[in-house]
Image 1 (cartoon, rainbow, N blue to C red):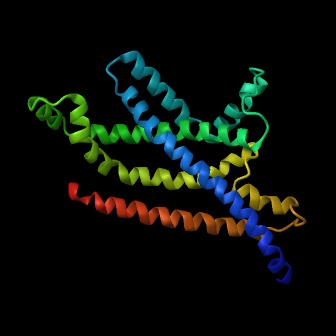
Image 2 (image 1 turned 180 degrees about the vertical axis):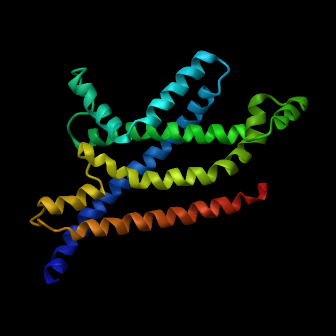
Image 3 (image 1 turned 120 degrees about the vertical axis):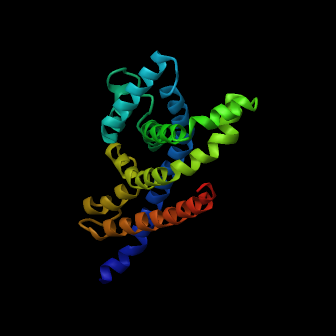
Length: 228
């Protein structure tokens, strides 16, 4: 116990650094995936059949293959196959590759949620808007958008909470997120080796983060309850 107490400041400092990387990847993914998912949703619903077909196949491939495989392909493919290592070998390059993989993956999942939310709104509302002289853009922003947000909050909340945990997959390309930091003390890091207890501490970080997100998303869902 005395040894653990002595090691605690070193471990907590490393976990804090890893958790900041985790949070950074989380927020960058949301920032990119939210708008990209909407673009993909519009593509899959397009009346231009070639566009909708290509978009749906792309979404099917991304959703049907493991995120870990996508990370490995995006990080290693340019260097090993195209002989153009665009990501480099540093932490910044690993983060950029991880962000691209996560944004594409989650944008495809979000697109299906967006599509379901948009298609759940009765067609009569769009027809009424056209009768009133509104454009399709105005109908979407003034009539459909808030109703769509209300419909997608519960499934989107699940994906967002899953994203927090999925960030740990980035360690497959040696991104130094919180699980990587905790596991490093098993192998030998900063004079500490064979210590498994830091991994249990990483679970606390995830639990607290997901607890805060759950409360925030539940509050948002209650705020949108006026659509009932």
